Length: 342
Ligand SMILES: NC(=O)c1ccc[n+]([C@@H]2O[C@H](COP(=O)([O-])OP(=O)(O)OC[C@H]3O[C@@H](n4cnc5c(N)ncnc54)[C@H](O)[C@@H]3O)[C@@H](O)[C@H]2O)c1
Ligand SMILES: O[C@H]1[C@H](O)[C@@H](O)[C@H](O)[C@@H](O)[C@H]1O
Image (cartoon, rainbow, N blue to C red; front, side, top):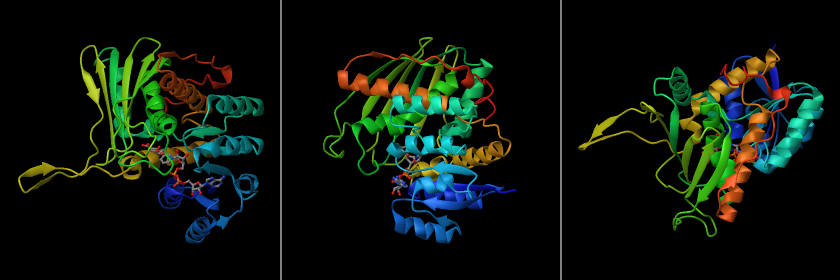
């Protein structure tokens, strides 16, 4: 049986996921779409032979829809996820799960109350080959205990209406999640340093930012966030251990020797840089929904990421080092296997 998926938000990544579900993932099809940009959503509905619905709520509650993908703007996620829980439907919600830890908490409480694991968060870097290799090197013990991580997250240009807060809650939230997954521990404190801002940022936007995190065992992490770097999409991660280091490979683009220069192209954005990760994320999600056992990042992971992002925001506003008070994980989220089997 094909899994019938409804997609809310048919913008950049929504359309990409619809293409992916239709052309790449086996055993699923997009049957319903909705977007407040009605014209674009209707065009996509026609192109992919699915039905346009006026609202996201109609998609979620439709009898024709088995599972939902949320790819609308960040502030809409919490409401749509809660609606999916009401309808008892599996949902893959793009990151962030919500724009505040408070809203994430409500989501985890609603999921616990319904008694069924329904939510997966779109932290697709956990499915990326490079990050997976780093995780297995760390777990092999070859480089000893990790001591420090140096990370870079650069976007060529930011999306419309990008804010200083979004650099963390919408962008660095990827590092917040994937580093916690790599190290298998939560954070203890956060600090944000604001260097000289680029003249190419919109007025009022602090860009770049340096985010400093400390884990509970004392591992130190620095993340450079630079959303106006101009030259391409550049994600880097190096783990420094007691005996050696391990780092993400640059994306495997062909090398060109031309006019005295040996070079390779840098991708312009996330859609090509992480294309395989998104593909694997969706293939595994569809299979796990069919087996009624999710393995990908949970609502708890989404919650913890938002707690950390909120602490970073406070740290920037106050110019101080902010302790991160991690909530106690309810037994409902104790499944150690989840996240390990990716
Ligand atoms: N995992 C990743 O790497 C990744 C990459 C890109 C985007 N995202 C996430 O996906 C989401 C969408 O990002 P995007 O880049 O596609 O943005 P986008 O602006 O291109 O698309 C978002 C779409 O949502 C629609 N929308 C907004 N409110 C809506 C509502 N109430 N109901 C229905 N549709 C609504 C907008 O009209 C727009 O078409 C964001 O939450 C973003 O954080 C994740
Ligand atoms: O900074 C961007 C990230 O690099 C992407 O992976 C997406 O998550 C996008 O929504 C963010 O704005």
